[in-house]
Amino acid sequence: MTRVAAVDCGTNSIRLLVADLDPATGAFTELDRRMTIVRLGQGVDRTGRLAEEALERTFAACREFAEVIRDLKAERVRFVATSASRDAENRADFVRGVVDILGVEPEVISGDQEAEFSFTGATKELSGRDDLARPFLVVDIGGGSTEFVVGEEHVRAARSVDVGCVRMTERHLVAEGAVVDPATPERIAAIRADIEAALDLAEETVPLEEARTLVGLAGSVTTVAAIALGLTEYDWTRIHHARISLEQVREITGKLLASTHEQRAAIPAIHPGRVDVICAGALVLQAVMERVGAREVVVSEHDILDGIAWSIA
Image (cartoon, rainbow, N blue to C red):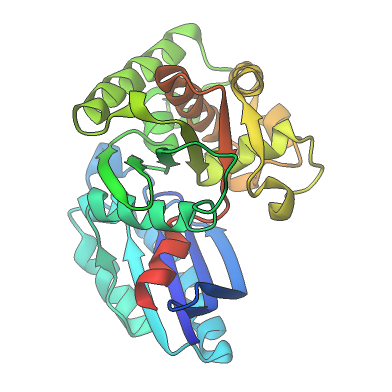
């Protein structure tokens, strides 16, 4: 067994997984898994730069993670950074801060690498299931981008597109520095147009129509699942591998889009850091399901973070 620490720094959140892994047998023992909303991608779509306050929130989370990694004596650490830091002009400031705190350089990976990790993390446990048809389509709805990966045991095709819950919120649901609540039909239509254009791009590389099982990853998907399951508090054990129908997704998305910030904040299953971006994230999920003709989505709590951990081992 190898004790590893994997860090996934996305546009909206930063997450840590410390686990004991044995690649020879597939044995996996989770020791610590945590997430902090840092909004690293705050304003990056508009300015092209990482905001100073976003960097400080991210570095504060890194300091917390460093303490956990030291306490658990992880032998190897890998830090992967995704969409926001990949595109930012001042990403050198981000890299320098992470190295100072954690002692490892963040790998600013490509969208294709991101998709590979997501597929491995999401499907490793599902590969032996007889009730799920192949090929899998893994959809990872992040803050700044969404990854599409089709494969059976291994990746066959992958594509990353610049549609995510934070990017779509900032582009279409913010006016004069505040989120528009509830979203107007015109703003919803603009988001849908961006999503459909992104799906057209994805289809140039990934045969979406060949998918037989849709696997959904990341906070937008797990939050919609938590609402569908009627959870009064977030419980990953009930969300992991839950199967949520298209009808449920449509109903929840419609209610979220018609709600105010206060109404969404009152829903216990929604993390406070997702209250403003969940509408766009749910809309991405609904559009994906409709495009591929999926009657349900299999929700996975294991995703790119787990794929990063396996890549270390």
